[in-house]
Image 1 (cartoon, helix red, strand yellow):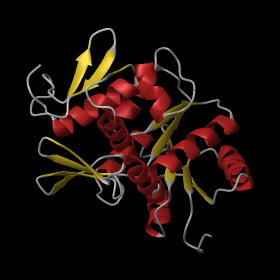
Image 2 (cartoon, rainbow, N blue to C red; image 1 turned 180 degrees about the vertical axis):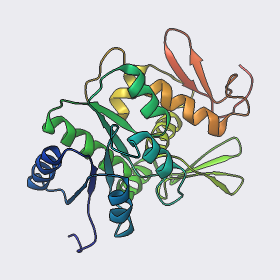
Image 3 (cartoon, rainbow, N blue to C red; image 1 turned 180 degrees about the horizontal axis):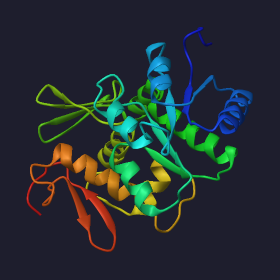
Length: 245
């Protein structure tokens, strides 16, 4: 049940017709939605409550979606807020830049509202604490340790010697997946299936970009990773010891 100030999805898009369409479609499908037109209205909505996820248009008047995503990712209150970025431009460079600044998913316009709903539900399932509790119970532990790091599956936190390293929801999901299957080569398709659960183009680089972001946070030298290794032509292997290959 939602309180007056609680909501599942915040839509930030300057197209009033699209805002109305998404608000109606998502509401009919059981989600509480707020839809606003720009960064200023986004901040006002966030002041009233933290949503489960945000749909953020790349091409906004004034402050664009990339600037707003960067702002969210530098604010401790919203570092773990799932971001699905929209853009009328489908070029790969826009998608890559959006993912690099911390978006968890990307959808090019025009898109099917049904696909947007499926992606949002996937983000919400992965980010809600009760899901983490269930996964932790199924795995038989609420924490996973590797090197000086502790991944808290319930609180969705990564600690290094007691100090929290902030992760986005997508980064947390990736690291959790690696810690569940250590010392095994995981292909990009394996990771997409586990983390996204829907079809993607053969040129989708979202997993590679997410790996790069996680490496920056856990590797002593991200250019020579010890924990998340690239296995050429096959995928990635997580080595929880972080020792030499």
